[in-house]
Length: 153
Image (cartoon, rainbow, N blue to C red; front, side):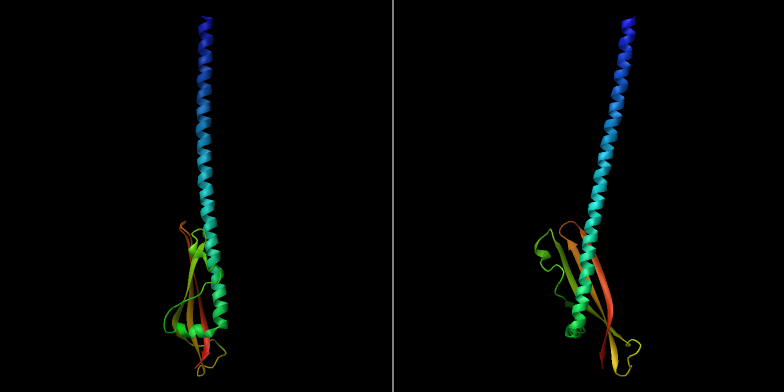
């Protein structure tokens, strides 16, 4: 009898040990799965921020260039102008780099800002659209900057 009870106790201990091991195994798998999901979320956010920064930086560079070269602004009053990319000009040939476009669009006329004579100056409203995408990852950012260029009549 003593031998049978001891065997039953050992069997019960082994069963409890196996249950605990299974619980630990599934807990470990769950934690690993959550870590993978979190890593993917962080990676996606990094890509999103990367294309946002490229698109936003391009707006700055395009604005500075357009103010220094106003002839492009006057060309845009007839039709949208595709602008030459400054920040990452060769990105579209490599799917691992950011590909981007920038377009200058004429919106219309506006009164000049305060301090300008209404009879001598006019405001021309424009917007620059900068779109950046990162290869085949699906990360995309579209940024727009509107501004008024004052010119004489």
